[in-house]
Length: 548
Image 1: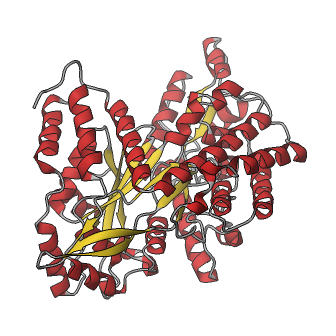
Image 2: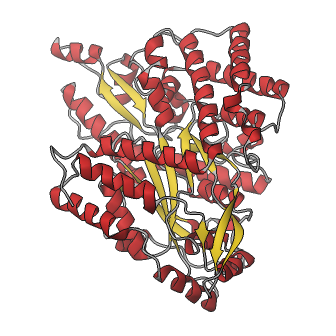
């Protein structure tokens, strides 16, 4: 096999190509996914136009140009894996694309929504755009005869193949892949490793797993590849997207959508302070002029243009096979801008050619693959995560869905703006010396030493960190909804929680703790900022929450 020519490719460039290829593959496999991307583009374009009205400091060409389009290209996918050695190969594969394991997710211990899997997510360490959530089946809680049949079914498959393994090993040896080999590895990913084949078996095991309420195990053990379970796009306003999807799926009419869209856009306009704008548009200038109000007539015009755009044939998703849209959004309520909100259209029922123990085939169906959308918020400190977890408990006790409008009281312990969240020590940020601060230092003017005083004087700027990872309860809720089951009773009595070290041993590498990494990013930015201003950094002054 040729090595290819030229220098090794930048892994981030190769990563962009991989996820573009996966998106093309998944759109061909699931036409509804391609339609959902078109809906998201329409909604994001509307949000970008709105933000251009609100914030005069944004360049209109940049908002609607390549940077704006890149927001819509951000993807996160999910795959499910059956064996530990397969999981290690997946980790080595994503390393070729500059992606490392972040976060440990024990889905066996999330209450009523529990599933027999543990997981991590592969992404770039800094400013990630793409992610792959990788679940590993945990079958030791199954009835012993059924667990043995699952292991036997998994033992007989070879998902990667010799060519993919050789390319991964070459990348490790050469510390990168050249053009030909990089594209060959992407070809293996979309042509074999993550592709949907439409074949499954053994059918007897599939039926028994479904009957035992172990649908996620059936999705893993009874198919020959690590088929892409879903691919999510990035939304600038998830509530606008979900309303648009319900319109395009003919679940709601245009008048309902107008009301919903008007409310969402008006709320975004009201909340679009500097921090919120930069959360949505990472390339926005560090200093923005005061926001302008948007007249109701301007919002109404945006809504009408969006209604017209969604009414064309490109967005007629009701004509495609579909199972409707999920009822509730996972994550915090819309007015709590932290962590992650997720939603999805329901999993499609797809035709499968199953084989039986005797080699005979029969036509059946499988329901597991769906389409997801996400909107990312601010990264929480340890104190912020405690407040969020307390909100989940309160919402559950009140019988409300955490992501619904009625759950606001349950999350009263969390701030509603970046300023409030910083004041309460609930989010993390990246600090920089301002031009005024550097000028004061060079002029020899005395500077206040507590960090809050530096911020108040305008000598230091602070931008909240964006949350880049996942929430186990939300992920379990998405899985449970699309598997048509609210948790897995066949796992028996709750077992002790799985430990991160177990998955690290399987991977053969450490899993990065996202909360610790985010806190370290904040602390490093404080040290660098104080050093640039000539201030001793023995005490990060005012940011003790980052080290809880």
